[in-house]
Length: 312
Image 1: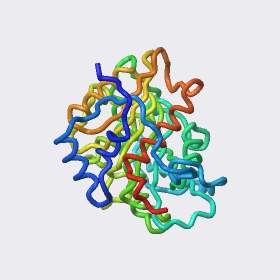
Image 2: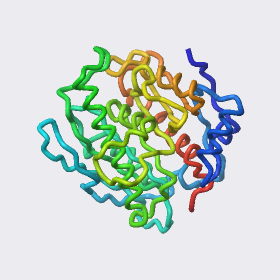
Image 3: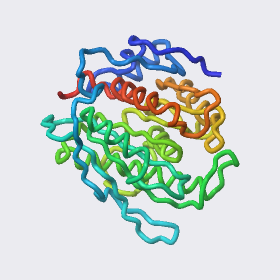
Image 4: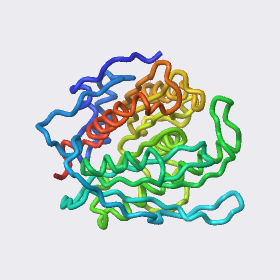
């Protein structure tokens, strides 16, 4: 099993690096020093309140709905218009802001950005000072349940959704000037099927798909997975984004072992990760852990996107 120990402020700083050289710094530090593997908690970033990107410094949010970020074929080869909602802090004047993509769940057969848990996360992060987007993606399965194994249909649906998530990241970079986004500070997160998509985007940037905005990088600086991961830690290598994974040990939908495997694979590849097992919990247990998911995601993105050095 992965060693479960609280992360320290030193651990977090050792993985963050500086803008422009962050990925090179991350790689060299992790290769040369002890990797804190499977940390299960992050303390709040230091700084007097209110601290932008850690604290809610904006009271209201501007939402621009149904922006098309790409197009890709469905199972009958008909084009599907891929759309997202943009959440921005009202009245914000900062020129280069971090961004985060949120991805809903639904077994790759249902769910919608407008009614998802992730819509609330997008609003929460916009109040911190981010530009947050909440996406729809292709739903190409009749319902997937990882506890019964991965069918060909579900595998193909997951890959298509990951490619759509990558297109959303590229769309943010393509529109960075218009949206006042820092293209070097983009993260992604989601729950259930959305967590699988977020994980896939974090670890599979070398297979970008063709859902939209070609010519821009699909890489993210960090990913958050709530009841997700990938079976066997598939596709993980040393070039991947740091990840934070939450998983209930009694999850009947997406097996707990998927998060364990993903965290282990990231650790083996010397990629920083935070793994938080939720003893006895089921699938996406927001009834008990909503505050944990929110606060830890905030701290994780703050650290791994190096927001202590971001524009304010």
